[in-house]
Length: 209
Image (cartoon, rainbow, N blue to C red; front, top):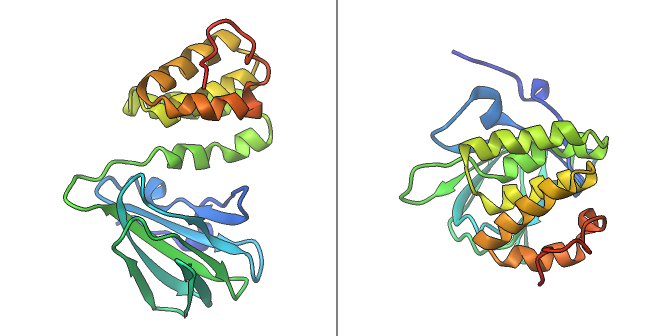
């Protein structure tokens, strides 16, 4: 058996204010998605504002500690330790704030009827500390490792290109950005206004929105 206390999991502070505690990665879980979340302070974000419209995941939230106020499509629900919230509809907009500074939320999710695949956003979350500290080689390595497992994934290619552009690797950045746009043309519009690509936006072959 592999055991760990939630407070001993890696603590990755996200730009939106919440703190990601990677459970799935810590244990090497492949059968389902599961992660924990804490907040930086009382009243702070603990579950980011989002929907599951892209991944089509059903989600189950369990409050492990403290009290948390969920906001689901504009309706507020206060939950305490041991209480569960299940969202079957991926389209529902959801998020939560911590009413206690030591609150912990466990989130489980997956797409109905299909084998679980590790989501690309995990790599993006994992790379946040390296990006914040401008350790571009580390951020690039994490994305390259993820792409070895999920070849051609457009979001990973796009983010890899962002890191390469910031690292002063224009040829690699342009090549990976073009690959992302070939798979999903929507990334061209993102790139047109993304500050990460300021250094290569005038390069020949930069995708047009």
